[in-house]
Image 1 (cartoon, rainbow, N blue to C red):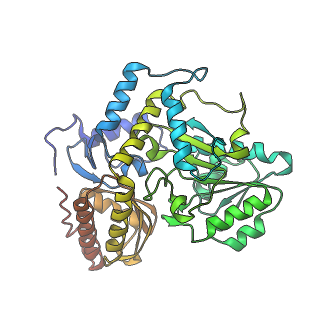
Image 2: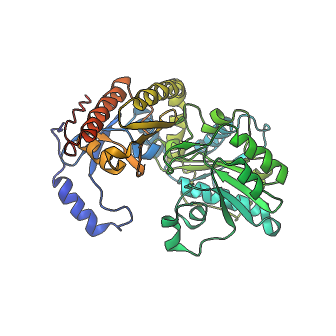
Image 3: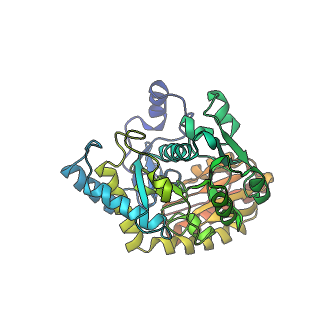
Length: 422
């Protein structure tokens, strides 16, 4: 579908200008997006898409949600930025909310928050907490194979993929990787010289793979016994994405990690990250040992408060859980889909090799008006706004079924795609 309002130059000319002005860190953008509303976006040619990626799990309330627009506009018109020589009510209120939402089982009064600008920065902060905890006597930090924690040097050191790491070696040392979900391997690696273990409850870049039942409980017991910190990276999975405030609340109810990192959906599109720590971990970073110019600024904090209030008032956690369960079940029945994985509205759709690479399927879907991505060669990732309607979810299922049927039948790529999504 084409919108009546297009942007002068269109996709092709804006891509040419992009190539002449932007570093080539992301490759060539497939489209130039100019407007969004709800679960839909429009490109510079006026073409409409159902956004089932939401900025990779960022735009949890969709695009141009009035609660975020109002919060940001009001705060910016009141007080846009202060240095961290000062604080603001929005910063304090957000920290209090995050402690309550993230660590409900922690000892009252024992938790603290550091507000940053992104998930990578949150994980950098968590690594510094681990180093302060470990000191010279605990030089090892454990991470999981297939993990992704970010691209700055410390976060990259905890990220497993060799293609991300190798161009920037030597990276900060002392990081070791153990197989994800393997309790025996974790037990063998754990010891009194380990400062921390960092895990994602659902490994997004690995193809949306939840840790198996019992793993987080075992990790909590082992880290506690060894005197190590347990850090849970909820950057992609937190803030309702899995159908609860945190994915670990569903996968391991009752455990209390030492540190949780957040970002993505926290600001609903505004750049913000957070480190939430409890107990000794909350006291390890003192004055001058960590900082940020923009972290905790009142505009981003106000956006995050609006996100939290809207998730509550609109019942979106419960809605996310119920829609995600139904949708994943129905997608799993589509011929050409071998399995679905994930929780809530973070869904990995595993594809039969016969349909071709997931990246090609994702591009065919974009041609049909659906934005998804392919984190692995055999997997599509769905991370739509949590406001997604049943009708939109069903329209995608129908379009995917038609596209995969055409591919399985050997039809030309893009044939028989009928995904209408008004």
